[in-house]
Image (cartoon, rainbow, N blue to C red):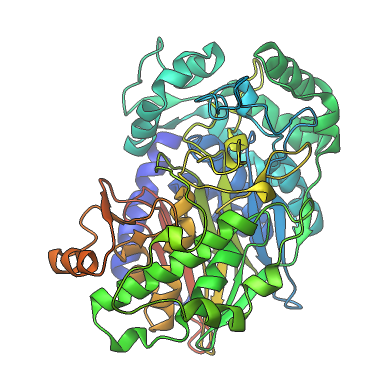
Length: 558
């Protein structure tokens, strides 16, 4: 039997050994994830004859157990896939959907004002989960191993338990009052409605049972039968609007990834309903016309921020679920369009956001999601970013399921111009409609040049895209994963009109210089993001991996 308490310690020791002795030794595969047990699950499946897609199933399910603050069976995500045998690439869209009874004013009072917290907390905040369906699809269409085999590690983690860490405890504290309001969630994650000790063991027997139903019956084990009954009854009894029809109708969609190029670097990234690929490529197209390596740090950050401002502006006004609205994707990622945007950037002065359009007001709040990256021995690749939105999602668990539900409905626009929990604003394109997928910022990405291939992504709410953007710029300079994950981070998302930078992320001279140019700056009082990155050198055949030092993840080569 696996003793999970000691497994974490052994993998942390292995990580130290790997980093000191063998991080550039040629191996069979490379994995980076936000939790040591998820990395362990991926390598275990590869050792059993699975490929990167089987490993992705195992890791997604394991993260649902061991990192419930960031993802889960009650959430969704995007899996960017590359099949080495024929070069086929696709994005598996397991994003949540609005229930069929959802409507555009469901979070407004009689005066048309947004009701605080209603789209963030409790059963009404939850969209229809996509992660279980995505696991089944991934296993059946791209994997080699039975779904049940790939889920065993996650089931074992849920049954036997694991030691929670400091990050888990910190995020638990952030959502404590919400979890306390829901007895089922409190009974799983809290101790007598209080925070458990950091070294506590978290066991999730109901979640293990739900995983077993999924392993045995495939999608019917979650979207029909006893589990579905418990999900629907639990949600409706708590004031939600789910129906059995919602679960029955949910389907995963495969979408063509967004592609672009920056100085001979090929970008493959997430498609709508993720805004990640469009905003990333648009910003890179704007930046392609500037000699970023030949200018000083202040001017460089100014230009990058101005590119972010314009790309996020287009996100707010144009992007939504392309199955429901017409989105001018080809125009937004066109280099001629970017040249037009670039012409409005002044090198000596910041552009006020209200000069672009609109006059929205917003602020930044919490963040959480998760990410893992894989390249297997055959060259198959997976970049997967998964989420339940806020830490611990809606804070609600339907009785008897162990499934912590998302609060992704907050990613819709409750009212055009109103902010969501990450301070993002939007318009009609991302308004609530029955069966619609809400806009996301998740940005799983492949980067490739003549010599190297990279797989990366990160959590971070609205800041995800800007973190990946900075990593691409580091890749283009020839730097490796350790540079991407350590790079000090800054961000501009159009509204609020300010450059946000992580604690200690800018020098005094940079702050003074950007202020002189007219920028408003705000230090985010913590270091944000949790990037997981894998790099393969096509000539040397060597791997390099890195897990963000801001998190508690593990990157290994075997």
